[in-house]
Amino acid sequence: MSQELSYHFFKADAFVALDAIGKNKVIEALKKMLLIRHFETRAESAYQMGKVGGFFHAYIGQEAIQTAATMALDANDWYTTTYRCHALALLLGVTPDAAMAELYGKKTGNAMGRGGSMHLFSDHLLGGFGIVGGHIPIATGAAFSMKYQDKKQVSICFLGDGAVPQGAFHESLNLAALWNLPVIYVVENNQWGMGTKVNRALSMNPIAERLAISYGIEGYTVDGMNFFDCYALFEKLRKQVIDTNRPVIIEAITERFKGHSISDPAHYRTKEELECAMKRDPIPFLFHAVQERGWLTQAEFDEISNSEKEVVLKSMQFAEASELPDIITLEEDVFAPDSIWRN
Image (cartoon, rainbow, N blue to C red):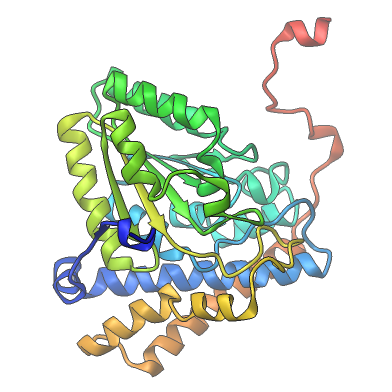
């Protein structure tokens, strides 16, 4: 049996889902995905012009997953993610101005210019983390806190396929299963752990379905390019996790359209492979479903896209006009025990 046949995909009927979610909410999802796409496209160009320093990891191609999650879950749930964090920050309330200014290293930025591309945060986003797998125990701890306080919330942890072999991931799964913690682990399998194909780096396939068996929890596979499948699964699992206090694991099959980071030319992937992946672009997929229902015309879609593009262009102007932080403030709000400085 081929590896492809071993997957059991969670599926939702797109036309049933359209009615269940509703016109306004579906169009709002499309707007959010377009904002993310325009933000990262323009931010990448700013990086290439020398306006942005440090690292830059684009989420382009994966927008359906986190957009669906944030719309299906609750605003009071807790989120953790990797260094590929621009999209989730925008979805959880960080303004394009604050996000872009942070990339520019300006004091009007989300972290006052100190975090940069990999370390955005919001009231319920515990931050983007630069260490592969380093955020997974944080998400597990958030779930422990919610259970301890008897709050009807879930912790949702996004990670890449490249983090799956990390010990922190397996320790977290073990504790979450052992202690019955309300956490959803989402492996965004974009096929490439940096430049290594997933089937050359991981011995298990499918990831979630097999790991779930090992830890005595439920595991699901979903098409990460399909907004409707993702939304329906996240909606189902939030209720399930709250009712059972049992963790679950999801493998969202997707593909990034860019290299691992802006400095990665992605020569490990052929032009034909990339073109094939881009045919499954989640934004046109969602638009065509809405268009077929008669909820949005091509002209209306273009108007929305241009409007979101204009928002991003204004955020670049805002970042450009903002001041750099004073170097004397760099140590402010940095946590460190007094004993470190005394020694």
